[in-house]
Image (cartoon, rainbow, N blue to C red; front, side):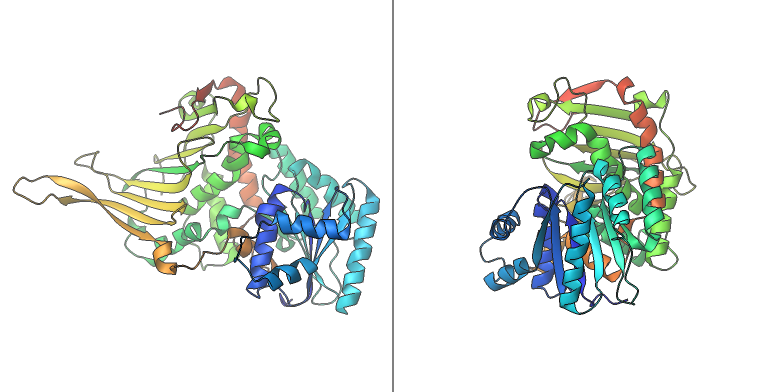
Length: 461
């Protein structure tokens, strides 16, 4: 199969927030870098009625191209590749028309085309769309060697473990595992990928990467922004399902995984899954001491939030990986909205036998200011024997200069076309993540809902 063959991208929910912020800008960036197949077409599917000119204007505004970001002719030609199919997702006639449109495009290409289907929709719509795609046989690849069909599914993968199992069964009945690309875009961030290189290529740290030398690990995904326009969706999901079940646990898996036997998609995903499988379940009496949930003051007044909503906008979980490498090392998982600052980082605290206040700390900054920092201690100049902390740091901006790091979605789309699943979650990873999160969710109502001020460090400040 060739990634250079004619390819049709089908985006369900093209008028939504995700398509505008991530998918279309990523496709435009790949197009401008000449990294898309020479012959390609994008079919956007949504409910809103548009004529052709209205749709073109909507797309131009939707992708929010900055002045000077791209050549005007590239933007125009990119939009020329986008078509629109209007309809309601539960109407089978939409899929019949979609099949005919795809057939017309393949006739124009004079070749059976690859098909990349992206479900940019809430989890509760996925099952219906998948079933109707199957009825119209849109999930069936072409017979020739260039005719693969692949499906891109956004997190969260289901709303609970039962929903995830049901979705996985449906996906598995329609597609082979190598056709399913489950998107957790944090896996595609350059700084997160570099954790594996940092650990396994540099011999300095890997011998220290265990319970004998590491005291604790703190994973933070903090956001200064409030829920904003996502409020109606967010209020049904909450922070733990929105980012905890996926982004945060995937960061834990990367920082804690064993060295894979060969850096292939299969071996890397297998080692990530082993970590998630080894997570000790937090339940019963441990919940009170190991879990905190909170909501920022004023959340209930957000447009789309129900009155008296118990939805958490912040969580902190203390958990353990039950294997020999990490036995008794606590992992602190923290995320929240409307906090003092936005940052995503993994902090590794090394043990200090002589003085707990003089820990060495290794920080992987995922965003912003992507880079790596190490805090160490030196003697203060002068006669007294005193020490002070210093920081050794590296920033990606120093390496790349004015070059902008590729957006995570650029990599994900590029890899999906190439058939590389390394940066996508496997079935096992999804199931083990839900197995860990579900007991906490089932006891959510028994954990007091704390509150915190906007712009603070959270309820534990």
